[in-house]
Length: 331
Image (cartoon, rainbow, N blue to C red; front, side):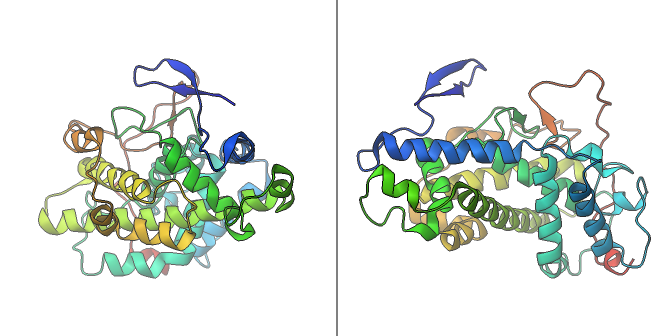
């Protein structure tokens, strides 16, 4: 079973996206592809202002950030969360609902961790951590690398860096983690009966959210380290932090091999990328090292761009200097 795969030159060629290892064979590849296709559909869901479910996510984000204030859209307050403008919906074009889900979950679950990371930082409008834009870029890293958004382009690296088949095998194995899927050799029919596809998709989406949270925390720590080492660091340097974390993410995933992955292990690998690289014994690929030095003259680090620009789409603004801060918690 083949999938179209982009080449470095932009051309597409027919190639096995997942491959077939001797132990699993084509039958297992078929199940993996079904799960991958389902996740691609889920991740392609665009934000719809007419959807009560989608708007509820924005309401939840507002309530958690500005308790007691009436929900307002558009509003200057959205900039305080690190969105580029007064209407956050414009920043959700690239990652859609998945990007908003990740932002909401991470903010609600890890707010104290972000406050701890930036404890004692001297606030400067041009150096504060842009939580929303950072979160959307982190979602974009995952979706692009794991083949979940084939047309999504990252503005902070020179070319697409999609995961190899071994990493994709490992990631997709998280969808079957509770089924004992890889614990024994079974027939295709038994594989199919181990769990329903919606449950596998739900497990994989949950795993993606956990991975996002760890990457966003890693990005915050990297930004804090840059501020400590170079106080004049400002928002124009943010692509450097994004490239660093992106390279570490790729290396951490590669160190885990082709699976089966366990969520706790990938969570630990992303939270402690240097340790995972040391254990793996590999060095980052050449493109990762080069990208750390090729990001000069960057005026925009938001990821919400796809391979083809929309004709009626307004130009993206430069990130606003407003950002997440402890003061936002209490309004």
